[in-house]
Length: 130
Image 1 (cartoon, one colour):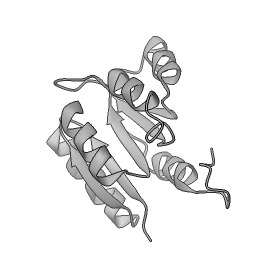
Image 2 (spheres, one colour):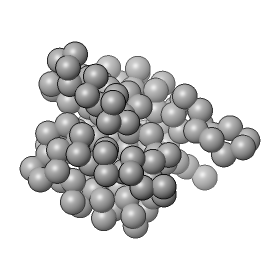
Image 3 (cartoon, rainbow, N blue to C red):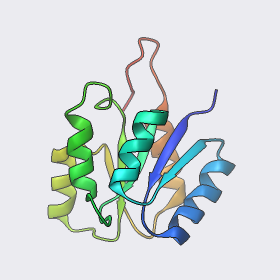
Image 4 (cartoon, one colour):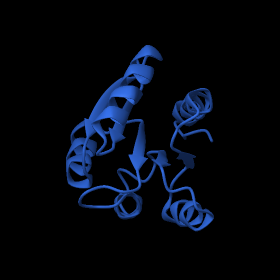
């Protein structure tokens, strides 16, 4: 069974680029253009991983991450933040909020592919491997 990924970004061109790559790599995809839509899709589809932009029109990526970390049903979902804001302060804030990894735009797709694969592999006991 293919792993599912939720892409959360308000840039349609970037979503299209991610969609093209991720489908080619064999992942099942869901998409959201803002934080509220993302929360609805998370509860509906419970993805194996979330690719999350930092700047969104309603809830920013850090707030969305914090919401997910407070819920038993969602805190296990790995989150990779992808943003054009690559400051060290932002990276540290993202890690403290619960983000598994942080990639700058433009994305190195081979590194992203490797990281997605490592985060979506599950051990026999059901824990996410990191």
